[in-house]
Amino acid sequence: MKESEKKWSCPYCQENHVRRHGTTPKGSVRFRCLNCSKTWTHQDNPREKPDSDVLASIYFQGLSYRQLRTIYHMSPMRINYRIRNFLHNCPSWEKYLDLCVKEQKYKVINLYGITLQASRKKTGGYNLYIALAVDAMATMVIGFEIGQGETEAMWKKLLVRLKVRGVTKARFLFNISNSNIRKSVQEINPQSSVKDFSFRFVYDRRLEERLDTPRGVEDIMDNTIINILSPFDFFSDGYLAIFKDPRMKNVLLKEREQVLQRLLVRIQSLSTTRLEGLISALEKRFRAFRFLKEDPWPIINGWIAWYMVQNLEIGYSRLSLYLQKPSITSFKQFSLCQIPQEQVIDSPDRLVRFVVEIATRRLQLPLF
Image (cartoon, rainbow, N blue to C red):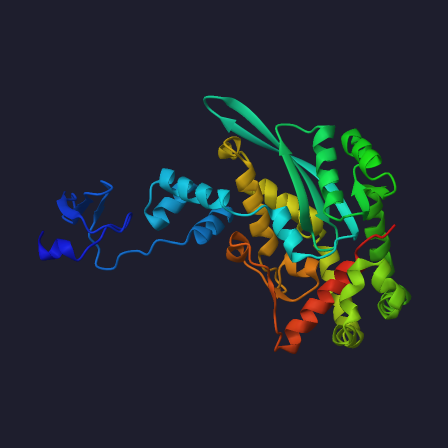
């Protein structure tokens, strides 16, 4: 073997059994691995292979396998294999969430179903139905079920699983006219309070109207402070648990104006926040996505996890808001089943943003 050949190892299997294999039309030297039979061209600055979690993350952002090929110079088939193999080895999002959260009793949960349509030239159309249970405050997917179409059994299975996982005192928001969801809730959670989605829209309008008057603004802020200072509400309202910490409570008492400003921003962007933003992102990513027919669970599970741990504009993820702890979260952590570590905040501004976001989302939450 020539010296120029000995210094190169195979970028695919890392073996050193390499031979020259001619040249490309542009004159670049081509090499061939005698171990795996792959070929490649010599580069003075070879591209590093991305970690699988990075590859999957970029894929979830909206790039296709063919688009990824132009970045990482791997065949679409190999990219598909790497991503799917990685996602198959990731933990279940529900099990990961249970590792992160000790108790999930007091929740307002949106129950919402979405149908994704996939078209294929050879096999025709294919529908995938996803039943979602979403925490209303953090917009956190706490459970999901998938199938080829909506059934009552699907919703029952999801609700039973939530109950087993400790979600025992939930209040549900859903489309009351959906008999599959309604009957499932009545059978699995007969003691739970339920409201139609229209209740949330009415609450939003009333909140907007109150913000239009100085007296309404004062009432909103005064009631929030009263709830936070009440020891009873720490336990009756799980969304106020963060304010057991005197530091968090003091931050909120000093930042009433920021809470109001953030509330106004969120109300003006309802279509991109809360449940609507989640559904829109899910539809946008998987619209006419033909590969969902081929074992869709790892991809849906992976996308939900990726979306939940991404940082929002406030610098923290939905998972951090759900945990009510300023935490460092990442898709890599999830893939390795590593529990998020609480972040030591050395910047007062970051702490204020986190506390204000919790208080604002709690104000938008219709309790019943």
